[in-house]
Length: 382
Picture 1 (cartoon, rainbow, N blue to C red):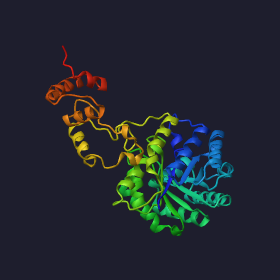
Picture 2: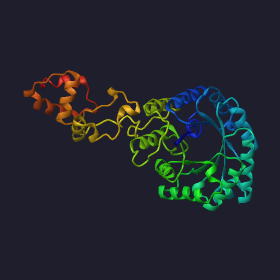
Picture 3: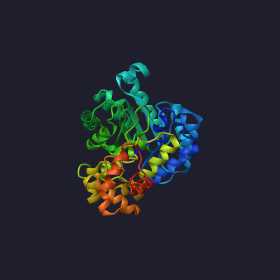
Picture 4: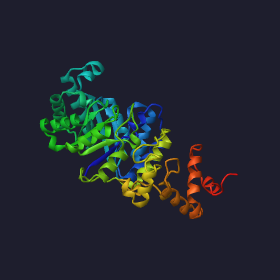
């Protein structure tokens, strides 16, 4: 069973311009429960009083899931996370520190030895508060694999239960990321005692592909967000990962607890509360994900949906009336006949070709064709 770690309420909320209230966070968390995620990262408690209250309230109300709070490898952060998580049924503290040369030299101004010491101290403190501790090596994808193995081995010995290999800048390619995860597995002492998690960003459009590469290399926890929201270009999209694993079981023979019929509802809730619209052509949950205008496609769909749909829209939560053929200048005769039959608009067979010609003429002038247009087309102009 693969764990789905949702960080919509933490990394997703870090999207520029997004500000979720405490009530928003609880509402999304409740929907994430229905969706079947395993871990909800509810926020970064030390970041602000609102973040603290959001994590505290989600921890208080969420049940049947692990609630996680993020903390830098600092005492104040970890203690704040613990205070926010006290009432959680299954609390987890997620602590992190940068491990790449770039982060150590320019951001942290620390030596590799100091990084290991800070990581170990952070995990030990977190472990004294909760039994479930996740440690992330920030910027793993630009870190030395041998150094990563040293850091991970040290935090495992200190009590970490999950270690995360991350691509926080969306830099790595799938082949490279799979190789990195394999190196971590091979070179880290005690790796068999913990779960390996992967956390990928989408700066080069590779977050989902990299996450799946991590899965094939041995990751047991996938970190993602609804609609792929998050810093800069965002994170791996939960709905895409879920449906890839659901649709391509031949390639990814794994199980998750995701209830796929809740995906669309979850996407729309997150879009509404964050104020971030879902692009029309977004995979799985975009408005056009199951819309067809091309005549060849419409003809195939009407004969057998599998000709142009690799998923069942209902599996994602689409209502039947939302799965539609779009009437436009690319539509063919089969789609027009089907539409007329569905809407109860009668056109005599002898008049159909003339009707179809008039339809094609108005599609050049109108972007949206309505039922009223289709009725009016029965009468030639003049």
